[in-house]
Image (tube, rainbow, N blue to C red; front, side):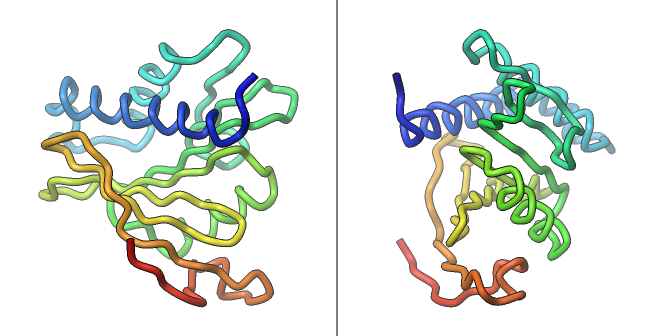
Length: 166
């Protein structure tokens, strides 16, 4: 039986694999004017091919763009998509979801036109990691970790208490 850390590593790997397939095989789709739902459906399709039986991938549910869960309340993964840098409202929404539903892994990601990377935000209770996913090499690199002050209303906006570079 895998622990939470190992499951998160696997799930993050499935997500990166789905992104790789999206940008490798569906590039034309991303060059068009597209709806978020179209991209989320592709990510859903690609991720579902990697999951073990008993995991369900649902889109546009519980306020997230994509959720992997057992449909009994146990959420392994929640995903939020932005077609630009994540807005303050998007940050609030992802963080609020993470705190309310307590999924093992909550990610938000931004597809940035004319950039060679996707910006991934990994939400945790006390911090948010900012990760670049390079679209040429399909490798990820952590940019920074922003520590959050739980008692502050600003923590919902990812306001930094302390920044650390890696």
